[in-house]
Length: 335
Image (tube, rainbow, N blue to C red; front, side, top):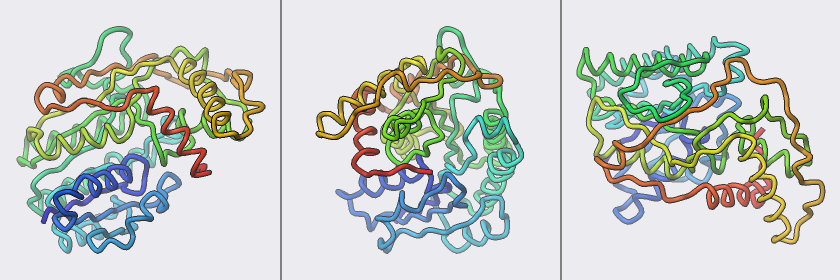
């Protein structure tokens, strides 16, 4: 049996990963895995995301802060994980600009606690879930895993700091660790402070959709289950000490993604025979630009594709349709 310790597993990507792992092991038998989910349950964590797993004998949820050294050490000693996958993070750039304290605590000090406990527990692999934002902005071309880290906001700086800690534990102590850096995720269960769920829910509620500046900032979008598939590939076959970028090559300007979602939401509602009145591009409201707003993030998943055989399977058109349908059918707005 393989024992997974997943931190931040009630959040958006973490909960999708846990569900992916259980679903991916149906053919070989879920009795071969055991998952412990640690989550502080901040505003971004939601137990509804993992509610269907509650009755599984090989799934355990523990509400805890990864910065709580004594409690985390006790959890490691009791459950003896083989794999640690660290999703736990403060991740919203706007909040980090308002106050960076919690970002430093969770993304740096919390990572340090997990690394020390992992080192003392002699785990098989530590997977640090990071972001393309650590590379900073790039006008043209793409960053590779060897590109220097040049974060431009407190959130990105805190994630870069966590990454450097992970690399230091590998280089100094030989901790078997790997870092993943993905582009922007979207899909079910995402908090509405993020762009895509905000646009969808504001459409459904006929509220104004705020767009920073002139909306020309560019992001690459990856559907969350494609990201989870990549993480699982890296967990099982990735080389210790390496960094792997995960991206879908689905770049769009923010204003373009907003317009696509508005029109697609209207179309889906009409196809379902539901009210679509009031949903139009007139909902768009340009607002003062974010401080230090990176113009474009650009990474390629070439290493992941060529060495581990990963490829994303859900393009942006289909992924947005799946995501909009989820928000409509679930009737769920994640506050």
